[in-house]
Image (cartoon, rainbow, N blue to C red; front, side, top):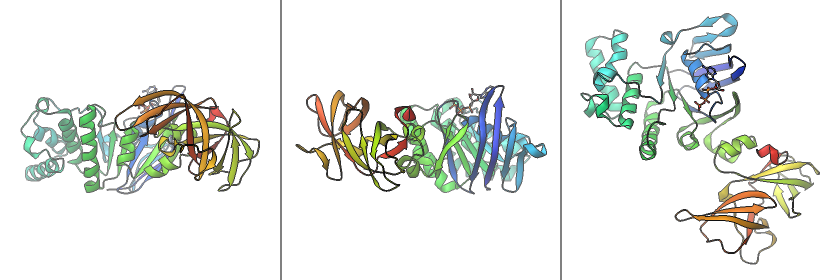
Length: 368
Ligand SMILES: Nc1ncnc2c1ncn2[C@@H]1O[C@H](COP(=O)(O)OP(=O)(O)OP(=O)(O)O)[C@@H](O)[C@H]1O
C-alpha cells in the first residue's frame, strides 16, 4: 500500500499533446477515477504510471519510490514498478487453468510452493472464484474471467492498482452486477486505485474522488456528489448526468450568493440565487438537472413557491416506465424534463427553482 503522486505529467504523440501538465495526488487506500470522453488522455495517464509508455515531462512517485522524473532523466521499467494492471481484455492464458493463471506472476517472482498455494487460495477466495480453480478460461463467463484477471494482479500484492475500463467488455446486466461486486471488493481491499472509465455511472458509484479530464487536462477533481452538484464548468456539467442549459442576460447583477434577475431571449424573466457573481448586462448560461425542474401548479405564474414559472412549448414526449420524458423549448433553448405527471397540450408551464441552478459566465456557446 502506498500513495501516488503525479506532478506536471506531459505526454505528446507527434503534434498531439495527449496529457498536458496533469498533477494529482491519490492518497493511500483511495479509489480515484479518471473520467472523460474518448481521447481525453485517461489511458495515456495510466500507461505512464504503469511505465508502459515513457512520458515527456513530469514526475511520478509511489510511496517513497520515484517511478519517473523527466528532469533527472529517471525512468523505472514496468517490471520494477509495483503496479497491478487490469485491462478491458482479460488476457488470461487460454491453455492454463484458473489456478495456474493466478500462479503465473508468483512463479515469475520465484515465490516458493507452499506460500504460492496459500496466496492463490487467499486471492481466489477474495474474488469469490475458489470453486473455479480447476476450470479453463473458456469455461467461464466474461465477468468471471475478469475476476480471475483481477486475482492474477492482486496475488503479488502490488502497491497500487490500475484498472483500465475493466468492465467495458461485459454486457449491461453483467456489468451492473460486476460494478456492485467491485464496489464491495474495494471496500474490503482499501488498495490505492486508479480506475479509468468513460462511464459516469461507474465513476459516481465507485469513486472516493473523480478526476474529469478534457483534452489532456484536468477539468475538475472532487467527490462524486461535489462534481454532480457543483460542476466547475459547462463541460463537466454536460458530461456528468443530464444537464439543461438555458442562455440568459443579466438584468440585475448580484454578488456570489445574492439574487440576480435574468432575462431570456423571449423576454421572460426569472430571479435566481447567483452561485457565482453575476454582472448586469453580461451573458450567462444557467444549468439545471432534470430532477430540479417540474410542471408548475395549475394557474401559477411569475415568481412562486421559491422559484419562477415560465412558458414553454412541448416538442416531444415519451413514456419510459413510471416517468415521462418531455422535450421542451424555452425561449429557443431545448430542455428535457422528467415527470410523473402526463404532459397535456402544446404548452407547459415550467417551474424552475431560484436556488440550485448553476450560473456559468458566457452565452449559449459556453455550454456547447
Ligand atoms: N500510441 C499513440 N500514438 C499516437 N497518438 C496516440 C497514441 N496513444 C494515444 N494517442 C492519442 O492521444 C490522445 C489521448 O488518448 P488516450 O488513449 O489516452 O485517451 P482515452 O481518454 O483513454 O480514450 P478512450 O476512452 O477512447 O480509451 C488521443 O488523441 C489519442 O489519439
